[in-house]
Image (cartoon, rainbow over all chains, first blue to last red; front, side):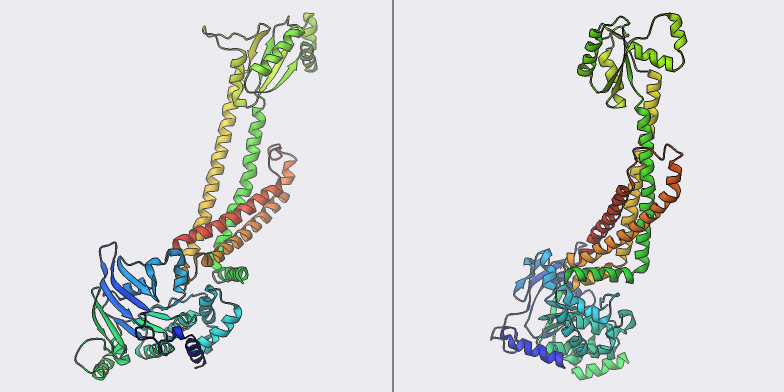
Length: 271
Length: 299
């Protein structure tokens, strides 16, 4: 995949950003320290949550509805602010970012949502190009990067379609393409497969994995049990706003069952 | 690339949201049209009212034996001691008699053998409403209820009380009503345009939210909306002005020859009216778009 290779090359040319050759104590790209979030209604979104994610990791954030996954994501994109504790992203505390600087911070993130959040009035091409136009990208840059990323995401034939002419899986691919076109160091996905059938979900996960392989840190909030079990990546489980489990290589649940067995069982449930 | 990009974005938005855009243009068109008709009407009416009010004057009659020195002194007193004097016109005995003769009443005066008409100063106040103060200054009320005069040469100061009171109250009501109507109309237009813009923005608030999540700055999002507002304003305004032009040429101009009210001298000229209407329509819709967006930018 040309785009991926080019991206890898670009990353390895910049040694500081290369996660593979990270120093012995690598600096965490995401660092939560005693983070709490209380909503004005009195509900607790997060309660004293601490974890660190290293550059290049692929992390699943799992938990039931209301466990704090979405709150975590919202805090990370600075859509809301933590009540207590500090969140550090790429060495920068989110408290220090003023309201006016938030757009610039967000340009260093790729964000994928369950409901895709595409611009309905733009074609696939323009949707992806918008992420570059926002940063003041030149037309040449756009012409060079957008087709590349659309090829990577398998949308080459849908360039001029509008979002409402695409299937859910295709829309989510556009959303991933838009999130990744700036080659952000961190990609956040909030329930990226929440609206998709299992087959399509696999495609999206493969895409996220491929992006992860280029060195981008990927954090996926999900309750897609099958997917988590099959991917066998790091899993952070939240329950009622607390971290209840953090495994290097984990399944969706902490049961003593091989992931293959569980996967088979779950596939059986789904189909 | 900025301006070109924002411009293309605005055009794209107008095209892709044809129905709300059309609604906004139509709103601007209708309000500008109404204002364009109403503003000259208000002006003509107040102009006519002012014309009537200009007839409010105070007459200062001198004693019939007043000498030239008395006349000069009284003139100086009126000009220096009375407040709110707009202009003073002197009508001598002879001029007054001449006026009577012209009116065809010369014979009666010939019968009298002498000229009984006094020298008179016609004092026009700077504002018609100040007529009372002028009179009070020249002929202060005495404690006993009557009036004294401030100079022995003055016989009497009159301001044709009946007429004055009527003129003042009627024209005041007319002017107030017109001002009130104009204010209401302007407020209604502003609300109408602001609401139409708000509705079309509300339909696109998700779009704004997405833009913010991708890292667009507020002004990056706002400029296309402001430009869109400018275009809506220009389209609505130009259409309305064209219609107004047609109405003026086809209806008003032929009538102006026959009706004094329409030809009233105080109405502003057409190019100025057009310029004001266009500026207002563009300004209101651009500002409306930019400001209404603020609510949706809080993501």
